[in-house]
Amino acid sequence: MEAISVFDMLKIGVGPSSSHTLGPWRAAERFARTLVHEAHLPQVAKVECHLYGSLALTGRGHGTDIAVMLGLSGKDPVTIPLPEVKAEPDRIHAEHLLCLAGQHSIGFNPDQHLIFHYDERLPAHANGMTLFAFSEEGAAILEETYYSVGGGFVVKEGETLQTDEVQLPHPITSARQLSRYCANHGVGIWQVVLENEKTWRPEPQIRQELLKIWGVMRNCVYRGCHEEGMLPGGLEVTRRAPALFQKLVLPCDYSNADEWLRCMIQCDFKFSKILKWIGCFAMAVNEENASFSRIVTAPTNGAAGVIPAVLMYYACFSEKEQVTDEDVVRFLLVAGEIGSLFKKGATISAAMGGCQAEIGVSSAMAAAALTEGLGGTVAQALMAAEIAMEHHLGLTCDPIGGLVQIPCIERNSMGAIKAITAANIALESDPEKAKVHLDECIKTMWETAQDMNHKYKETSQGGLAVNISIKVPEC
Image (cartoon, rainbow, N blue to C red):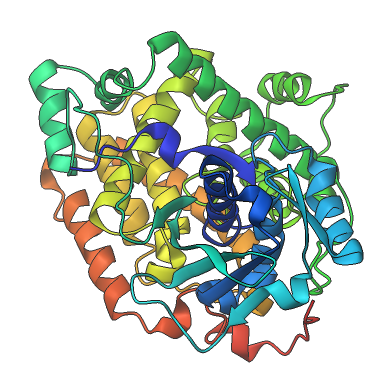
């Protein structure tokens, strides 16, 4: 059985796409490490990366080319200084030189050595890529195929996800099983998840790492509310979060994200303004995501704004008198577990399931976490997750120009609002009378994904992507 950690579902990385940026980045990074570990690096004279299926069709718009170059260069998406995300690929383009694994300089022309196979798809997954290393004489030194299966998860051909090597105290494959554990032990979802997480790392580290994730989230919201300008990629989309933020002006002074959050919590907002703030939070994150900034994959980059927006709502506007660090930790534990249920029972990859697998899943994660955070029962939390996903079923992924901008940025606002609405409905409902259970909703989502035409699975070959006449530059 898959053992998936909360830290598998919530990862610090760089935008704009978990499957098309973070996944290929990790694959290329792993390929470079293999060359080092097998002592092949000194013999390598040339590297090629072949991209297939959705990775080819929307790769340039999603920054797959940039990710591969950075991964091959040994850069890490968690720690790379953000200015290097643009500067290093620009240098490689200009000089046609790449420092493989950060140790060995080789000739590299992105126009020749990154090959996009638009009409081919590898058999195992829509997001396939094959990397080759050659000697000076042209002999193949290493060939590896990887699949980016959503949420930054990468599988090498012939392997399975490395998530099944531990024995959890509470192995969970379904919402009903999770509910039974909670009932048998008289605890909430977060407590069951915390016990499982202690299999991988001690409790103080779990809390520290989750609060670090929250720090990245709120800093991303803060940057997105203050960083003006045009998004990259050629669609000429203007950032809207800063303008909306200016209209919602705060009556206090602040100089960083933490001071800003304290100011937000102290203010008294009308309901109409609260709705605008939620939209502002979500769009701020995904405008940062579209700008190759540092975000938290939650559970994907394209849906990275939903959970931060709902967490900001929880901290600033909810009826809970004070939201502490402990409350944030519990929120993220619940959110991560709900996301893992969708990964185990369906998919979190838009290339496999459309946008229901991204925005829908993130909305369900946030809805359950908010419900339990506001005092809801386990059954109400699971009900909230079901409600949120139920109203995302069938949502297609049709990014215009292959960029994670239209309609992706606005969809995060909608997903956040739906999560909050789902939580409020569940908190006022009796789950015993519910006709649809989360497990059946997950099953339905997967069946819908399988029935969905491939045009609507992150290929930019259907939907808005073909009906909006906006020219996007090739490069």
